[in-house]
Length: 459
Image (cartoon, rainbow, N blue to C red; front, side, top):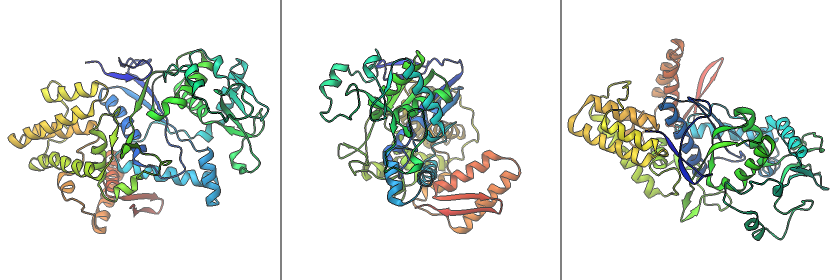
C-alpha cells in the first residue's frame, strides 16, 4: 500500500511521492523559545517525530528540519525583564526544551537552524521580493510584503482577499500600502536592546517572523521540498505568508504536502500561554512517566483535537500497563525483523500508511498483546516490541515500567553510567544512547565533560 498523507493545501489524501526518489525532505515550524515548552508544543513535536520514524521504518531517507525562532517581541521582552542577553535566554530555553522532549522519546531533527543564524539569507530573500515588486519599504522604515500582488494568496487557508478585508482590524500599522500587507523587516526601535538589531540596506532592524522560515527552509532543503508541517494555528497567517514569500521569490511550489496537527484542549479551549491554561512538559512529568505521556499523545490521530486531563492520562497509564504486562510474561526475541506479511503487522502498516493512523496502529498492539497472553509466543512478543518501536513505544524493560512511580537510586544510576561508559569504550554507541535515554526517562540528565560524566535530576 502506498503511504498517503492528508494535504491541507488540496484538502485530500495524497500519495507521498518524494521529489528525490527515496529521500523525503521535511520542514516543520518549531518553537519560539522564550519559556518552557508545554504539552501543546509536545503534541506538535510528537506528531512529526512519528512521521520521521515511520518514513524511516518504510525504508526512506529523511532530512528533517525543525527550526528555532530565537528573536521576536516576546523573547526581547522576557530577556529585558530578566536582565540578560537574548542569547543567554534562548540558550537556556533551548537546553530545557531538548531535555524535556528527549524524556518523551522525541528524536532530534536532522537539522535545527536558529533564526538568528540566517539573517543574511532573509535579507537576500527580501531583496529578491523587492526587485520583483512584491516588497516595499514604508516611511516607518519597515519593509512589507504586498499581498495583493501575489495571485495565489489564500490558497492554503482557503481565505479570499475579500474575506480577509471583511475581517481586517480598524487599527492598522502605519506605513502599509494595504491593511493586508505583512512585515518582512522591522525597523529598530530606540528602546530595544542592541542584540535585537542587525545592519541592513533598510537600516538597523530585525526580521519578521514569517520571512525567517522561508529563508531557513529554502537554505536547508532547497526552494521546493516534500513536506511542510506545523500546528493548525500556523496555517494562517504564518504558512500562508511563507508560501507568498517563497513562491513569490522563487516561482515554484514551496512544499508538495502541507501537514497540520490538531490542538490540545483543556475544558474545550485550545491550550495556550495567552489563555493561561497550559501545563508545561515538566509539570506533567512530575505526575506521569514519560512513556505514559507519549502514549497519551499517540493514541489520538495527529489531526484530531486532543483533550487533556488527568483522567485521560490515568487511563493511558493503565492501558500501557496492559501492553507491558504481556511483555513481562515472555522474554521477547531481541532485534526481531518485522515480517510485514504477518496479518497483524500488515494491519499496523496499513494504518500507518493511511496518514499515520496511530489509533488503529495502537489497536493492533493490543491485539498482539492478547495473542502473547494466550500463546506465550516469544516471536509474537518480539513483534509486539518491534512494532511498538516504530512509533517509539515499548522499548523499556517491562519490569521497570510496571514498578509504577519507582525512582532510580544513586547506586543504580552509577551502575548505568558505568555501563554506558563501557559501551562507549567498545564503540557501541547505540547502547550508550539507549542507556542515556533510559536515564532521561527517569528524569536523570547526564552531562559529559573531559573530567567524566556527572548527572542531575529534572523535576
